[in-house]
Image (cartoon, protein in one colour):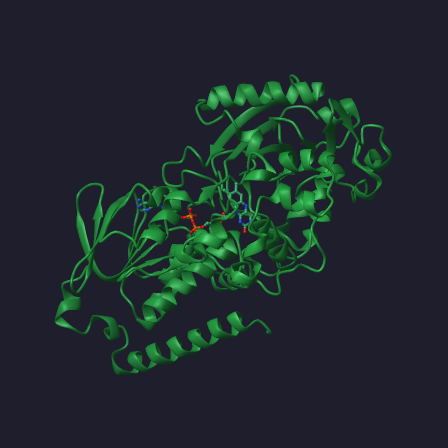
Length: 483
Ligand SMILES: Cc1cc2nc3c(=O)[nH]c(=O)nc-3n(C[C@H](O)[C@H](O)[C@H](O)COP(=O)(O)OP(=O)(O)OC[C@H]3O[C@@H](n4cnc5c(N)ncnc54)[C@H](O)[C@@H]3O)c2cc1C
């Protein structure tokens, strides 16, 4: 690999494995637990959060002889990977697609026993019908459609209508040399509002209006162009749409399989409220008031949850400011049961993508036949749903759906809702960076603070999503081993 950062990481890994293997020769698991002090500790390392970041860190540390204790607030492992096993079709409420560049996730899947997979692009019906300017059209007709208000240079759509603009407006080749270059101060001038940067590059106002509905925040003004360039840089590493895979039995089988590899305890329904560093150890206080002690702590909770926790001594000012201000997108999934094939009624593809409040609705094939619909909303399409009950959200989504595709009336019904904004252990969907936040905060969110280390997708440097979460867990585990 040409990337010096990747080389460094591998070298650090080899160094740490070398160091800990030497310790293991001197006493195996006792490498961590040999001292009198260690005996009084509840674990060598306490890991807060049993999402992919926390489980990845726990497995690496345990492989190297550490006694780990994982504390998880929820009643299940997986965090933002959550298969709704109790709903027909077992829809995914969180992370589901694994790309060909997901080295850690793929290697972990083979370690837990290579579960069966299916091709994501075959399960989701593509292409989708487009709903634009109040009309439902076939995406193949968009380029020449009278509804297409884009200038000639922006009309090409690769069968995705204006949704292709997210890709076609990106410069090729990318100004970012490698995966970690988004943090390089040389690129700080790109940490500006995405809309202003695109306008400067000659993108039309009409295209910018569509992009407002495509970005995962309320408007392209609210997201950093450098963050979008980072996403575009990672995207080819995830692989082509054909290489995206999901687990046939549900993505939750990945974190559950990881948990099964651990000898140490994963204590569920144990929310942590405070972390306190002492002279020769670190304490974790649970909401029920128990105090647990360890040599090191790895905290993997999403930044909006970290804001609610007490950390003593407090984080350095810049890290504190980053935790308080890092932006998260909204994320809402509404799953519909399909009682009758409405697409036979209106003759359009069953999946629908809109620039309006409905967001996108994908038809998903179930492994044992039949379909369900996944209405995913982020940015403006999720706005206003925060305060609704599930029943109110389902009814509102259904009426928005009927307005776009009258043929769904009486043929589909909401069956499950998942809101990551309302989930008290997430309080948001995915981390993003607002303009100026990369220049100001860099990678400070992942910096260790004494005996306290941080992981989670918000601290990943190279990859994003599930692979980013696992990368961050690996980095934090290496920090602990090297310490
Ligand atoms: C709808 C959706 C779709 C997605 N699709 C994809 C995809 O297709 N591909 C992809 O790669 N990624 C995808 N992602 C992103 C991916 O799921 C996440 O990036 C990844 O799972 C984050 O893992 P994590 O361990 O960093 O955080 P989390 O999974 O959020 O784990 C944090 C854990 O900490 C626990 N916790 C929180 N507070 C406390 C506390 N006080 N005490 C103890 N425990 C606590 C939480 O319950 C949780 O289990 C998607 C995400 C969502 C929401």
